[in-house]
Length: 276
Image (cartoon, rainbow, N blue to C red; front, side, top):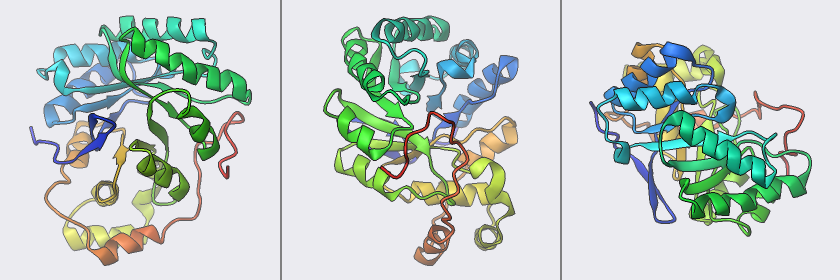
C-alpha cells in the first residue's frame, strides 16, 4: 500500500484528496473494486443511494483489512427523498445497507426545481448530525446561489460537482475556499475525453506517465479539491493512485488550464442554473 500523500483540512475535519468513485459499478465487481482500492491505498470511498451498490460497497469495506476509522466514506440521498421524513428514512436505509453506524459525509445528491423543498432537505442534514448518522454533511450539484443559502441552514463542508480540464468552475471553487470547505470533483477524467487530448499526451510523455495520472496531478496541485475517479479495472485503480512521485511544472499546469471550453457532461433537466 502506498500512503495517500495529500489530505484536505476543512472545518475541523480531514479528507484524502484522492478518492475512489463507485458510480455504475455493481455486484461482485463493486465489492472487489472497493476491497482492492483500499488495498492499493485509497481511504476515501464515494457511493450513493442512487448507485444501487451500497450493499456491495459495504461488503468491500468489510472484506478489506483497512480500519474503518481510517476510511472517509461518503453517501448521497437522491432528490426524490428530500422531504424530512423521507430523507431521514433513506439515510437510515443507507446505513443499514452499508452495514455501518455512520458515514463520514452525507450529501443531498441533487437539488430540485423547488428551492424550498431543496433547502428543507439541507435543514434536515442537521437532524442527521444530531442522530449521529454522519460526521459531516454537504451537498452535491448545487450552484453558488444555493450554496450561499445552504451554509446559513446547516454546517455544510462540501459541494460535490462535475469538474475536469474542459469544465472550469472558478466561482464554485472560490466559494468553498472562502468558507473553509472543499469541493469534490466527479467525472475528473471527463468520462475518458481527456485520453484523446494532444496537449495532455505531450505532458504525459514529458513525465513518462499516463494522461489520467497527469490530470489527477493537476487536481492535486489545487487547494481544497478532492476527486473521485472511477476505475473498474485493477490496473487503472493502481495507476490512478501512483501519482505521488512527480509534479507538473507551472507551464504544464497552465497548459491544462487553457483546455477549458465549458464542456458539461452531466446536466439533467432538474439541474441548477449553473451561471448563478
